[in-house]
Length: 81
Length: 461
Image 1: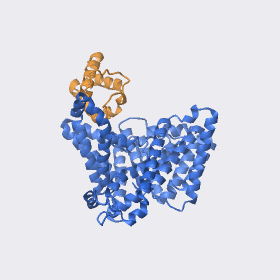
Image 2: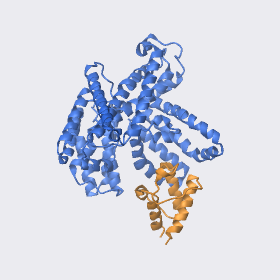
Image 3: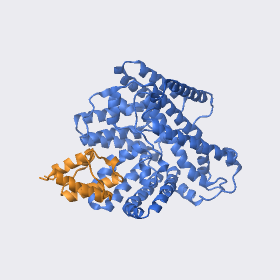
Image 4: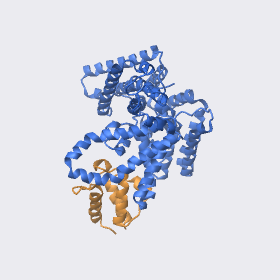
């Protein structure tokens, strides 16, 4: 079981790496529109990095169903059990 | 009944009045009846194909079975009609088959992914796939956006009706004043490539993207405006595409609903499946996605090359993105220069790809590039017959283009919240009068002009 707060910190680090922005702070309501450079291409880079970081596998349907960072975090915590 | 005919405006006006007069519970039926009437007059018995495809998607989604088989069937229908010209047959083409099959296939894939509960009522769903403002050339609206709107069947506020009428008028302006005029020039240039040109081929290079933009965004303006008169706020298809500073940004601004459709249902699944391959997977996914965008327009090698050229642009863009970003961070001056140079370079890249799109064969595209700098000095009398006095032609074209861009900028600013609602009553009534006069003028011009507008470029796909 992964602690949600630890997961959040680790996810934040992944976001900073992928979008190369050391000041980036993730929030539950955040979507692709809020982050510069978050498009359909970098989205998959993000997925790959999250899978590596948390040792999980995500499906296309799961990735498609994501609505915001909060939902993404919840999915990670659930999968990383 | 093309959109730029007086008959269409009369039909639309009648349907809009009917929509406004009947009780709310009948409005969906009005929209549906109008859509099937329009389809019947445009494509005759192909109406059964539209109906059959819609019923297939509706019941497959409800039964939650054979979803992907149904998607395959819909795509097979599309492929069949796209491949017919290759067999040299002279069959008619079902209007909007590229659009309604994509709408329905998207709906089925979303159901397969469990994105929403399938629609339970048949009438709104029939109206979704056949919605006449969107059947000729999109935009490809998603069911999740359309169905709640037709379900509510909102009354159309006067301010919305005014904004919608003005938007339709803008579409007419783009089509008649810019696209058709530029089209004559571009057609002449492409038809006289190998003979002694007597026309600057370079003008065709710059003219065609502008013609295409005025034509297709004009068609979209009429489609979205007409939809708004029936209580449907359709998705935007263009967002100042030539201001894009990179090819990937261009695709987020050009034919946006098609790009989004392919991103969701082709690129993302493909990229997910190939994500372990790293950059090879990225390039492969981009190549498949862009070639499919090309083929969606028709099964010709020129469209394949159009897709390949764009895949090369997007791959180069994606693979160098991080390195460029780091470099620009260290060079703020260069970054500022690129803000200006980026759109210019991008426009030229896009224009190169458009040569393949416009040319009727790969050989024509080759000839075009071979003669790109010909004919700048000596204009033939035939060409002068088309453009008239050159200085005058360019001045009028530039003025029309500026008016279009200015009108589009105003439209982007005020479309979602029509300005009329926020201004005092006297200003509102002035606006209403101007809009009415504009529409009346448009109808008079259409009725008195004996010059037929050429068909919309995207109405054939």
